Length: 151
Image 1 (tube, helix red, strand yellow):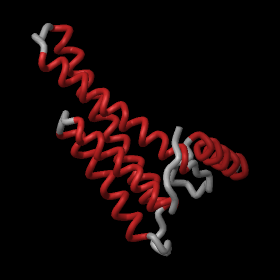
Image 2 (image 1 turned 45 degrees about the vertical axis):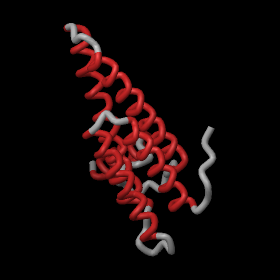
Image 3 (image 1 turned 60 degrees about the vertical axis):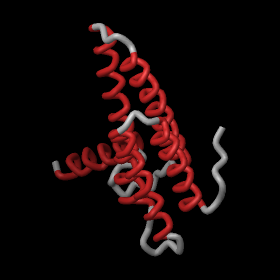
């Protein structure tokens, strides 16, 4: 009976860690490049949402427009929250190590991304999305120690 229970727990942990590379099980499966690409994609979604919000808010608000406006706001805020979660759960909890020679630089850069995402939640100014992208690229530089090369 105990063997079955241990096997079941081991199977769940293995499958969970494979499906979610940013889990908090010591799985050792990391996808740093993928995380940076996702952060940048979330930032682009925020920028698109900000533009749509501003466009809809400038027009006469119909019921349909009000509905779309609400959905764009939720999308913008959800993607900003997703960025903050990735920084906290993946980079700060697992990947940025206190014994790294670039620890302080990495920590400051991660904090800057979190703050930039917060500012995107608070605003529809395109400059906040641009600042977020710059912060993500600066985190990449601090984390990887090289210039970013994304397609």
